[in-house]
Image (cartoon, rainbow, N blue to C red; front, side, top):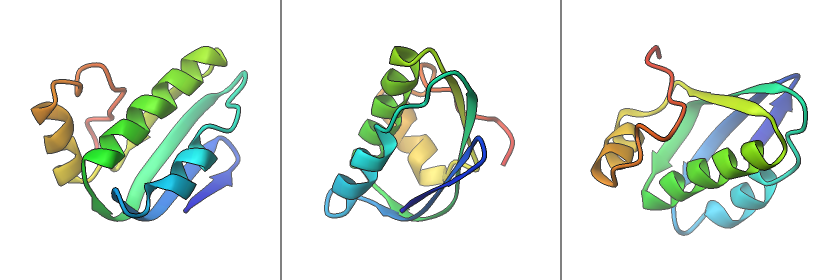
Length: 96
């Protein structure tokens, strides 16, 4: 689930192949004209589908000339991004 709180998007629950559909549709809503923070602190589970979601979010932001940063990225999601060679392309905050 994704909750908008000002310019912060708070993600909770599972970001897995089985659950990503609704989250992906929510993530592709326009992010026009703002700097956005995507807070992943309440993500309970993540797999490779979550990496695809972050990449999709980044493309969506770029398309709408918005900026975003991912914060509180779970360690396993950070590891998957590293494994797939996309961690450097994603705006992952180094602080948790």
